[in-house]
Length: 249
Image 1 (cartoon, rainbow, N blue to C red):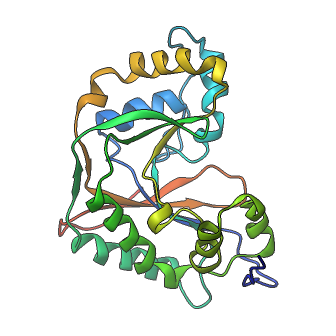
Image 2 (cartoon, rainbow, N blue to C red):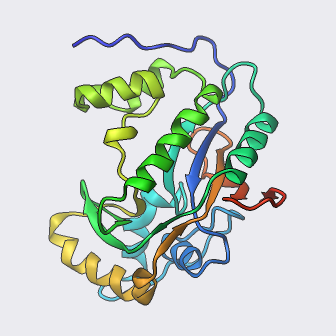
């Protein structure tokens, strides 16, 4: 199956933006996740590694390294470069407007599950309202996304994707949207099967009663990657359904 991709030639702007869900910086779940991952994306502060039985601090730091660069989040609009003619100011203004006119979505219960080898916080049951909200974010902000470069396409390992995922990559710049979308807030990198039981125990010990609370999707955050490989940071934070001024990190 041959797929024709749009290739950006001579693209100089390597800064990328992403639209993620993350709770408010002061939310207990956000604070716990920042300690677990070792970094707060709101201010970029790194925190000392934590030891959570049966893992040492060094082991937790190792298992969370891949997730640390992105910060605690759920992907709604995957990282993208700005399209020609669009500006950061325009993007933030559009995110403000979209957030003011969007109602929060409350997930009755979120649980930790192993997905393709890594652990993440996910809805306990499929949740149509959340899927519809995520689809709305994908389509609403598509005009801000520059076409993928050839290198960006290759980083997605297109040969390993299903036909539906390849089509999404071509049209939307990300394989896992719409029917392929799975809401998840990543907590680890890939954990070997032999460590799975220990990791489940550590996560349950660390997050404890926070996992029993409903998860309210009541905000959107614009994250930015200043240069390739740099840690993602919160650029602006937007509460859903609230006519408040934008909060800039």
